Length: 229
Image (cartoon, rainbow, N blue to C red; front, side, top):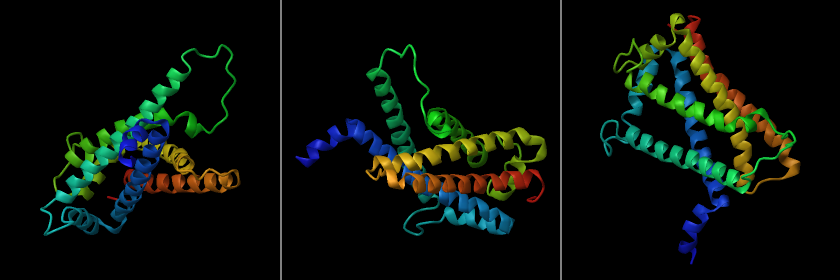
């Protein structure tokens, strides 16, 4: 009986929101780990490259070289598909539920992050594609050197490539807004909504979003102004 209800739960609005909450939480954990790894660049080229090399050997000897990274990438791809796929389905359902627009619609109260959640998601998706081509594959990075991630990051955010830094900053800021609203929504979707906890939850979510935004922006701006070379 319980097994039979799983597909129905997946197709339900509650199920979609739960999928978004759980997948968003997993992506949040990855983002924290990725940010911490990025910040190791401040310890110098040798340590940063050693960290990048270590990522390729996780699970050895049980896993072959880079297998962990590919398993991680496949898992992240699945999570992203579930997260944004559920978001798209919920958006379509919301529009179908009200096919005729209000003639005189009152302004909707809510945060900037909530009102721009969908566009923020699109920006983040585009950035992910660019980021892979830029620092993973290297096809759009003119100074890309295989096996030297430190040099690749430095080459990417040079002053004459200010537009790359600007695009990176815009994407990270969008990520910050997305995370802030997503953390609040995830907690509420998982049944923890409580008016008494609303203010502390908003403050905590904002603090995490600001911390992550600053953490990710520290690297490109430090390269651009010459603190990392």
